[in-house]
Length: 279
Image (cartoon, rainbow, N blue to C red):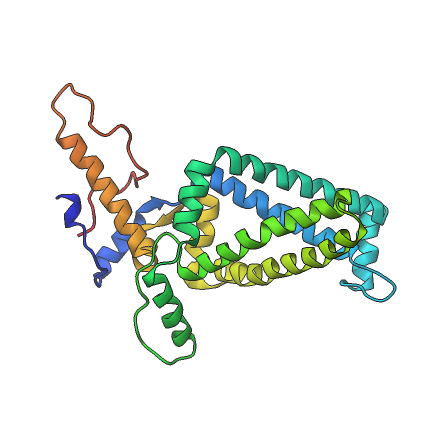
């Protein structure tokens, strides 16, 4: 079967086909992406925990008194808590700068720009249909999606817009760049950017860790893979791309004469358990 024969639209599956696809897996995230994701999650958890303990004045505080006392007890003083907050932040910034510099071509340009934040017509339609489904105003099927659905792309766009602002304002506050007036504005913008990310994080965590339909996406950030049935039903365009890559690789092997090297230089990411492309 040629790559062009891979189906172009999702079709209903028999119970046997669905069960077979549920047993196969497709690689979605490289190890580097999984590690970066959890490094980012841990860094934000530590920064939010200490940042909440640092927002306090005679007129305003963000966290309750018992939390402030607990955090000061853990670190010994607010000064130590601030030093820890800054140290984690600088480590986080450094790691992401290294990632941005050395992973620009393979990750930033392809993984992030093309896959994570680029919205197409199906994505815009997905947002409309999804909203109507939540309101009970339609029974229309959701349009096929790529490796990330439109909701995930909007969250990614929010993060990639706000994170540079968090970094820059954090550095201004840490090193007191540009004078006291700029530092004061940096504090305001820092809280705004963090608040925007946290608002998206609450939905992101709920959808990934709690919402039943998206549980495979959450576990993929641990294992790096999703089952093929989930990919087929929720990310059909990505599933089709993977299947075409698999078939092209197999076509390259079968067209190679005995004793010759395969015409394709390397095998694309593929499910080692899948022996044939889905009909």
